[in-house]
Length: 93
Image 1 (cartoon, rainbow, N blue to C red):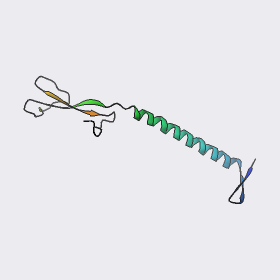
Image 2: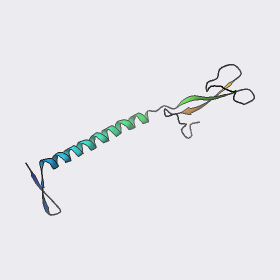
Image 3: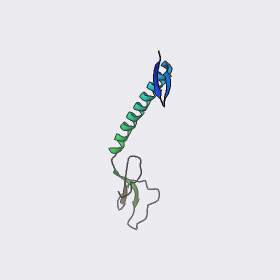
Image 4: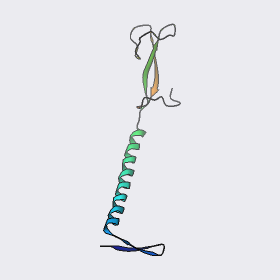
């Protein structure tokens, strides 16, 4: 089965294969647009949270071998705001 159509004054015949390719391309484009719209929704809901980055002692130095979260007394916890990708967003610290 073929369909005739005119474009730029020329008569074209669309075969079943051509029609199938065009329908497939349209469906693929629709699916891609839908997938991108879903991916964008999760980014909009990202939460910025404070994350421990280091500790300082009373002298203002980092104790040797100290992990990001403070263990022990007389230490001050330093933190920064980060998004889920572990980046500090501009203007949030």
